[in-house]
Length: 493
Image 1 (cartoon, one colour):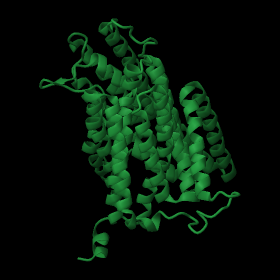
Image 2 (cartoon, rainbow, N blue to C red):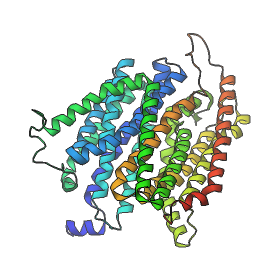
Image 3 (cartoon, rainbow, N blue to C red):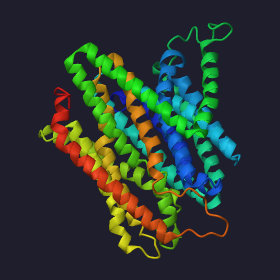
Image 4 (cartoon, one colour):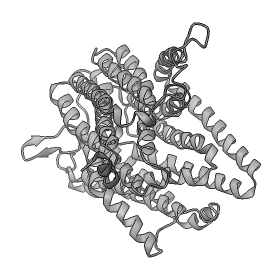
């Protein structure tokens, strides 16, 4: 059988190389993220609230950078060079953190943010470009790629998190860096399968002087390095990072409305519909992203993590989400197709409402489990059920949101709208850090001081119950007004 026949019947071979490279990149990112808050609070003795603020600013900036990284690839580097450069920076960032000081942690995080911004959007773009427009294999190709993302996250939240738990966080960070280096090697090995879709826009002039003695390539590299001190400053000054996000959000929403006004009433309606769902998107992810912050400390302090005589690390409890995605992802994609065929597919706003409702019900599980606590520790099934409802909520909302962006805005504005969508997730991550402070304490335990587990459990149950009631209410509200919001979409489903 020839190579051509293989490609026609199955998927382009490049997909499987990109799958493996992305899996290792996600292993790197989620491995570091799983350990980050416990490292901030326990190893660096920051105290809960400062740790939450740093964690929130870091994860927010991670979602802002792909907007810049995508443009760098489109206009100068091309996807392949952007991915290679980004992956290398992420590995360097991880190895900086291994140094073990607070200063090296902040520099390492700044380098990882830039690297992630170059890697993440551009490897996804390459997957899309492997298929011609209208190729029926494209959706299933992205489904396979999505499995790679969650396989990486699952390995990270089990292997990396447990290595960090048993041997110390720096070994977990080092393992994440090694994973990223493996990703770079795999990506480079498969490069012949996607070089045709990842070349720089102007390869002939890329390395020739253009800005005085600087070539476009050197100018971009220097620009990326110049961003690192700025990101370091924002991570150190998390309040300023919040104002920067707010200013960018106002500008982006303004530009969406201005375009709608210019293009007439129908497009203006679509833009308002898009902005409304962006705001609900912020609510969902601000509550969902407690996973790596307050829910990890809850697991550390008030969850009995013993299984058959083995105690699971607190960071490892984050594995439930990627495991459930792998379990339910394909079931949901088949479900949407079947519902569409029989005309029962819910509208986009209704799916968002149902997603937020399930998220809220997940938090209510903590109140259900509280009476069963032994020595102020709830059973592990509390988190298993909570994360299951959060994951099914995510599957109602996350893939639907990405698809919606491409349908609602004019073709020439897709990149800006996708940037706005990622910005809403960035804002949500920042808000998640603020929300987590409701569960936190301002001081680190003094030497010899023991955590009051009774008070801690009362706080978590109280806060998570309130979050549950509020998000269930918001989900139901969106479900009620979904026909009105759906009218703004003018038939787009």
